[in-house]
Image (tube, rainbow, N blue to C red; front, side, top):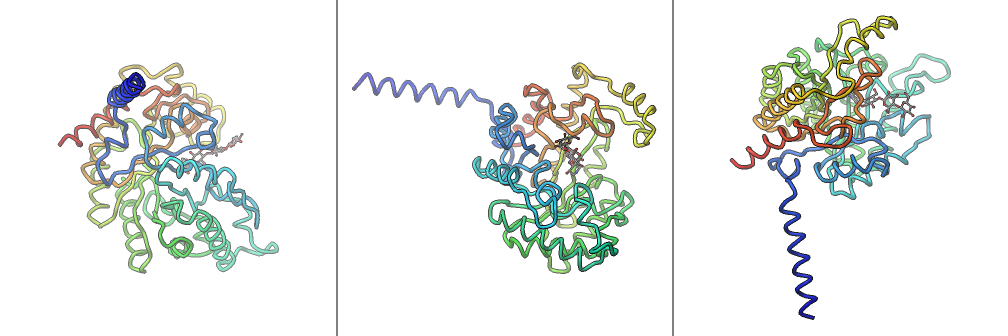
Length: 372
Ligand code: G3I
């Protein structure tokens, strides 16, 4: 009996020591009010990538589906929904006690062509598209009512100069399509948080347009919980001053700010990379794929400093959520964007799931803040 209790006490002690020795996670270091998370893919939410899954469970308290809730995935044909992978994603988040984000209800990309086709070969009209939008949102948001805590309602409605993006949504419905999407989302789950999400909001014209857009929604009495800057940034760009000014302007306008899709592209970009000339693209790929075998130590350090500087600004301005766009470097979308077939290093874990210096740098910024 005595031997058994001694054994039990010993085991407890070992567990306590192991726990104490385990370095703190990003979520445990983050100040109250800051959620920290990652976008996860189908493999990661379905048991197909145990290494990344373990990182997500240990480090994060919120997840976003990288692709599995997009219109083309869940609603590929009129009247046909495919919720299998989305269900597994939501279950994954719930099982691990995470705040589950829904991405995305309305976007001009990854939306099937049928959504924008008129009935019987006629031109698409406002009422038809509004009815499709409302039906889609009611079904998708309704299915996860109470389980998905917040939705990216509208993605990327603005051009770089702050004018409306010329999308099929704008063309068929008019400027109030954004308001309608927020109205339908709130109708489907009144308790869910609702976000407007866009990229390059550090550009003043686009930032101010996004602020005006959300102010307009709020003036109509619509629920909007946060303004999301995607933050697909580079190792040098945007300058820290621009990020600082963006966050200050959004906070001054009274909005909660989320950093929704954070990663840092370490490869050079070329102004001609967007062209369709395949030979030229191949030359650009060869010239800009400069770290095919690993990121050199000096660049690892530069990436670490960049992440630390950005996180210092997120803390300074009280950002409410930071979500990385991916978990490890193994599966980032940046290997294939803007040119397919390069090797990129945009995240905090390398392709084998090892913590990079950038991880330590972010943890350090959070730790110093926690110690204050
Ligand atoms: O799953 C199929 C696979 O079966 C097929 O063999 C393969 C061949 O191309 O394609 C696979 O699908 C790809 C999918 O990513 C999953 O890897 C799609 O082609 C590809 O277009 C898709 O790209 C996604 C992109 O959105 C679409 O525009 C990226 O993963 C995703 O990271 C990216 O995320 C967006 C956000 O939603 C909005 N903000 C910008 C961000 C980056 O573009």
